[in-house]
Image 1 (cartoon, rainbow, N blue to C red):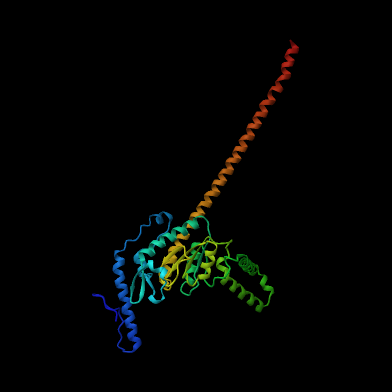
Image 2 (cartoon, helix red, strand yellow):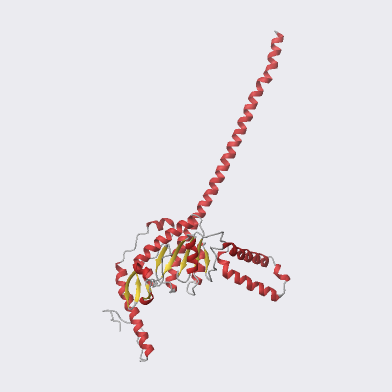
Length: 340
């Protein structure tokens, strides 16, 4: 059995009166996990989180090391399932399980959020990709809140490399939704309407989250880069930057901004995705502000041009009036000369 730490007790309910094999194995696993948490907690208490000076000014907030620890972001996979490329992000091995270094996780998370903020502040399109069961709902909620696009059912092959064909499905979905809202489906029978509704649901599941995509996206954020390898490969082919939550069993070579951490637990996924969504939301707010200021400055410039044009017209009128005055005086002068 895994040696118990001094002063650390087993969680309540871990020991059962039964002596079956399953009960004993359950107790051993509980003891190992609890000891792992206890060992790692001593390191996290000494960790100094990197200073995030820019995040305050940019309007989003990063989680603390303690938040990452409580969410279980430090849990990796078993040693036999590891990827050697993730070695630099691994802090230790406990009970045959890799432990992720949360200090590096927080540092990389800050870099990734800064990149996504700058991309969103420049008006770039960002796609959140997470099709595994634990991440589907989280990805959809956070993407809609931040204003990003999302794929949470299945990444269609060719979404980036063959966008022309995917665009046809988007147009088809928009056309169906328009006809349903205008009541054009009422002329069909109930069975035909049911079949059309099913087709709309299928299109919404596949391209509904990226219906506003105008071309190749500027960045991708993926949960579990190993599962979303098709999306990562397509983005890498066109040199699109990829931000990914990467576990210890994944090769991060195609990921531009690696966020090492647990990509299986819902709490871990929710914490990381929320931090990323906050950065994207702040970036899009900055973009909206720039657009409004640009429109205001353009309106001011147009008004200035109009005022300048009006002033020039007035000057021309004044000049023409001054030129016409001597012509009116000349006949009077001739009259005076004749009288003399």
